[in-house]
Amino acid sequence: MKVLSNTWNCMKAPEYKMTIAILADPLDNQTAGVHSYTKGMVEALIRYGQGYRLMLVRQRKDSSIPQGVQQLVVPNFPYLPGFASFRLFIIIPFLLQWYKVDAVLEPAHFGPFNLPRRVKRITVIHDLTPLLFPDYHLWIGGLLQRLFLRRILQRTDLILAVSKNTANDLAETFPFTSNKTAVLYPGRDPFFQPVSSNEVLQKWEVDVPYFLCVGTIEPRKNLLLLLKAYKQFRQQKKDRVLLLLVGGKGWKYEVFYKELDAHPFREDIYLTGYVEKQDLPTFYTKAIATIYPSFYEGFGLPVLEAMSCGGVVISSNQASLPEVGGEAALYFHPEDEQGLLAHMLTLSQSKDLQERKRKQSLDQSARFSWKVYWQQFSQQIHA
Image (cartoon, rainbow, N blue to C red; front, side, top):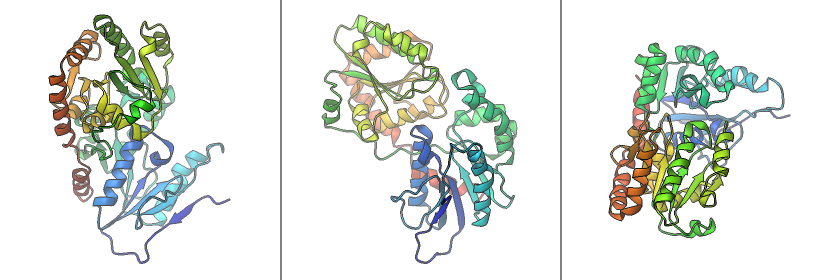
């Protein structure tokens, strides 16, 4: 049985400043925020990281990866008890030492592990929700964080926080991280741009104005407050306006579905489930506003995606979200139903406000650049 393969696409290996391995499993086993972050980061390092040898450690090969990027494929066999841990703690560290990498970057919190001191360890931290808000997660997530995260952070050489809020949480929870944490904002994905066509809306049979919410159905996303505000909105504004909820099921969603089934405007609340990426720009562009009521986010990628499409954003004012939305977004406290309702009513009644906010959204989204990310990353790894 073939357990691993190594793909090296150069006819002749050039000289490199440094070999950087990226533990890129999120490209193969995730579809949400960490996947998008990892994909954008890898593409940025490929595009702007001239002079660096890049190695992607992942579960399967991707033929779209450009030549000159090494893919070290280490399949995972989850049906074999204990193999995932053996792969993470033994196989991958052994191979990284064998290939004499200079730095290892882990974009998903959990690692890297078991490397010699000569190898620079870089760990990305998106948020600390399993520790700070355990009720928002399955118990296993919090347990793994409590068991491993302190040791990971003690051993890592550089921590990349995706927002100032995450960096502050790290400093408060693990004070020893302060002198080795850098804030590197993710860049905007150029795929997300304003769309003029209504073709996607026709496919989804959306033919009236709508509010949009993008995210996993789970308690942290605060969708119960959104259902309540939407109920009041429809009671006060008699025109038919839909609510589109885009995203798959997460966990602890039973209460949400109970409230949804009892909602007086249930027929006008569309649950799309997971939506292909190519449909999202239209949803963002055409919405009256994208509403993001989350209690806590390490970054808040849908806010940036919506703004990149020139979409209006109504956002919670907690955690990192004001860092992303800047002055372009409209804010409310995630427990303030009336505050959210007021923004929904105001926007639905003012085309001028919508247009001003759309322009502000495009200006704000332009602040987030993967090129800048790479420049800052390059400075940090040589510090």
